Image (cartoon, rainbow, N blue to C red; front, side, top):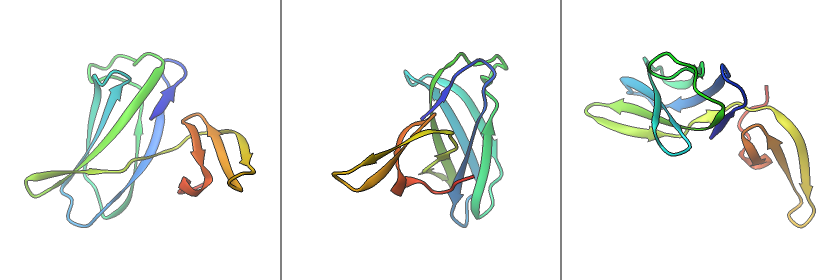
Length: 120
């Protein structure tokens, strides 16, 4: 999930694509599951980056709010769901002494340090 704080916001992300994918679809839905935007990319094997400019399929600015991302890769005649990795800003870090673990409080929500894939 990603949150757009203001109209015109942008969300960046990446997805790891296995060999053989012929097409990649980035599907953006609002908090109630309504389709907001569908983007099609020609993928390459490995990490593929993408950005959503905050616009709907009709070209209007999506309102501030929570959005969900789904990634579908086309293999032959079948769509396979892939895990999106979204970029978010770290706002603070919390240490849980019971678990001995760090948690990042980000613009995407709370994320366990063990789930972080890249720091930019």
